[in-house]
Image 1 (cartoon, one colour):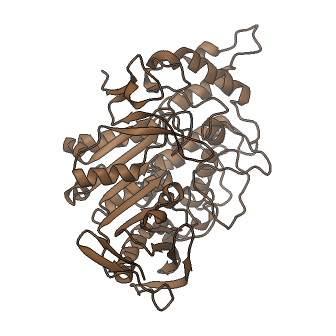
Image 2 (cartoon, rainbow, N blue to C red; image 1 turned 60 degrees about the vertical axis):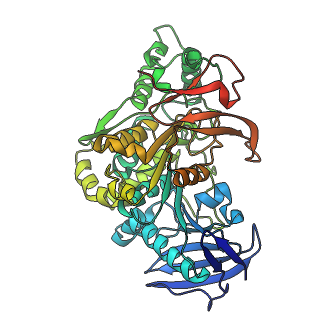
Image 3 (cartoon, rainbow, N blue to C red; image 1 turned 135 degrees about the vertical axis):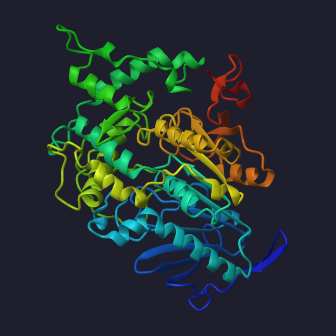
Length: 510
């Protein structure tokens, strides 16, 4: 077995077999196998309690560190954002992922229907139990406790990341929360149901949206024509969409116009998408401008405006997948799917529910019932910080799903609760980046490296390198820019190569 030295500790990997895997409370081992790709490691699949399953990967050449990878959507498989995006096993990390207590498509929530145990497992319990169980197995298997414990997640995994910072503050040293799905009641149930009702007023007609491809392209091109160059570069990227004051109503058709304009209904629906809307006694901010163009990956077409196409798959989360496939109901786009699944299976316990005639009159009651289980919106991170924890939050300005405005709102509430939190919590909003990654902007920032450097130096990052990445190979192209810690904005210096980091700086604008 491989022996290694990490810091002051020396560890030797255990035997990769059913008898060699250590026991843990309320845990059973389902399978163990020794694998050689992508590096020699032991793959353990286990079950905690009644049905929370996990996949733990233990490399032979362990680096003495542990990272848990978050999942996507409604989970249901062993998606591991850390290993999917960074292949951490090759670098010697022990890593774990959980199905959060059920199996199924990660855009379907029928497993939660009238099942409180599964709802609680999905909300917070499965991630916590998996993390502490994995740490116990690691310590026994290698004969040494992990010397560093990170959590890395985006989308649903980003919400899991905020949840462990709030509810499991002594489990992880460093946490990355990308595009965090942290408000399942307000954003994903309430706001997204509101948007679904706007885009498809008849829940039984989900093929043709109010804002069709032509209207979306018209809107996106008009916004870019007016606002793209405001940041000094005409590159299809708005460094700060809040600078764009485009008026959607300027595209309203006149009495004699029929082409290259929007109908009154299309104008209203688009304006609603951008603005904060109220529903059921609460509200949620709208989407930033700049993600409208139909060709934008993980933009409006996938998330909000797309209509149902028979046989088409919705691939909404980078790195998602698995060997198993599950049947999905007809879904026109991702936010419509998540919202209706949440309302059916969590809010109302009615598989036949739809929004025909829905008025949000009892929304607040059900949201209050579910929020303590599902929402990671507590701004008090004091216990995590007292344990030395560091948290990086991230969102793409071109994310067509989880509004960057909502992520900014949470971060600013953290600072309102305790301004000193900025010493240990940083937010980066990435220009031109869509959901988790992708888009025309530079999305190659290695947040695992950033977290480790922060933990090692105790110097909070004001800016990070942001390489451009080849869309096919996912390797850095050799060009890049920077990203800035909020509230600073990535600012082009007015000269120099726009594909080099030293042509940009971080500026806090009034």
